[in-house]
Structures are given as C-alpha cells and as structure tokens.
Length: 110
View 1: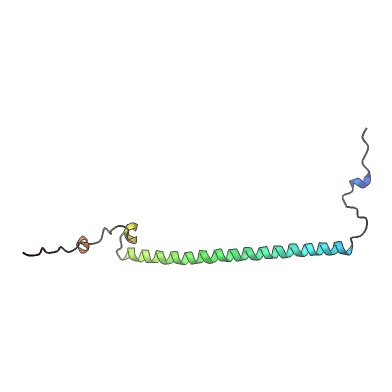
View 2: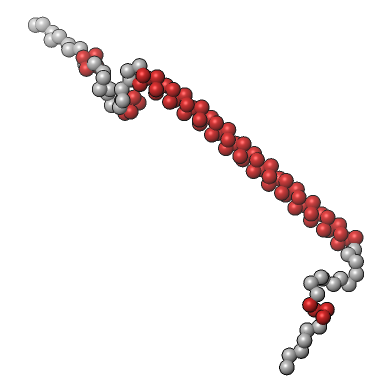
C-alpha cells in the first residue's frame, strides 16, 4: 500500500529557513532594476526603428507622388502611352521620324 504524502509537502507556499537577508533583498532589487532598464531600452529602440521606417515611407510617398504628378502632367500634355518610350529606351511612336534622320552628305564634285 502507498503511504499518504505528508501535509507539509502539499503546501503551495515555499518554506524559508528564515527571513530573506539584506543581501538577497538587494539582489532582487538589482535584478528588477536591470529588467526594467532593459525593457525601457528595448522600447526606446523599437520606437526609434518605427520612426525611421515612417520617415522612409513618408519620403518614398512624396517622391512617388511627385513622379505620378510629373507622369500625369506629361500624359495630359500629349505624352506617349508607351512607358519604354517615356524613359527613353525605345523611340516614341509620336516622334517625327524626319527630325531624327541624319542629314545626307553631298558627294564631292570632281
């Protein structure tokens, strides 16, 4: 048969040999201070990172807004609808072909 556990082993509270010493209390206070300062530093870093991300997003948004305004202004003023022609990779279909032809040289007379 099994023996029933002793009542003192069932208690949820830890039993101390005595009251915590001043050294133990100081160690607990230092540990709490370290954890608090670490948490504060971590929050400061996270807020700084979020600020950097928001600044970059704001700069990209204004740059994109300016690019959209320029492209919409060029398309409103009769710009081509070909994006490759807009950036200069291929000739524009609206361009005058005679304007880009080289002038013919006259043959020297003999």
